[in-house]
Image (cartoon, rainbow, N blue to C red; front, side, top):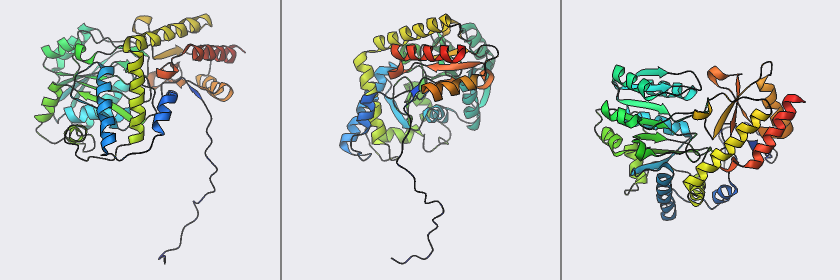
Length: 382
């Protein structure tokens, strides 16, 4: 072979064999991956239309329906992180001129506002202080004032550790003829979620938190009512990659090529969902709550306070108030370097004011709580 141009070797480094530290990931995600999930991901790669892989896709859909407690036909895993499925809910349901009402009680409510505005929506906001939740009267007032096409709420606000009650919300949405969109990124697999009983029309999540997988996939589901709105659009979905008309032809009976999905990531998701089904949702939700309660009591014993009232506190993610005079970044850095424990820092309005501690999926175990509390006590009071 004769080359027309000389090879540029400036970036040809002698990279050593990859060696990364083993961390205990007790932040807002990713969480540590279950060994069974890692083993499943090491199985041979298959093509995205291989009959054996198509069977995996079918099983993922069924197990996601169980985990979300829904019968929605269109229930899939999107190739992309949780933000991809978040965007998919809006890309498929919003047209230019639609009014979207977003309940903003933290960082990810603001992200919904930003995304919806990029699809031409008229975006209105209801706001609460970070760490609080909306009541039905406040939501009714917003629906009455703005008459939106979609009401978007964050069920589990990852930035604050607050869990938004959903009972009764869909009845309000039906009264005002709008769809209900729900972010379940930090609740799916660790907190009770009943999409059909709650009347949720659009929902999304991620793979790396309560489900116990690496990041890279994002569960997505839409109700028949949301599908009907999609079919009656006046304009094409503006995002080709996330267009559910196209993705449904790949995940549905037609099996039409759309993109090269990662078979290995989906093996991992299938195994994680199989673990959820083996444990059973009630047992899994109870485990997360019991371990969170143990953490909350332990934090109190060493003089630390939680940011969210216990009534609305997430079992999967706890925001801990940083004591006066303490550098939150320095403590987090010390936990990482001296104890190999990762905790999250505050986002947005809570930057510097809280640490975010995740007990999600495989990581929601008593021994992890004991290790963390001991490390926190030694780090803060040494």
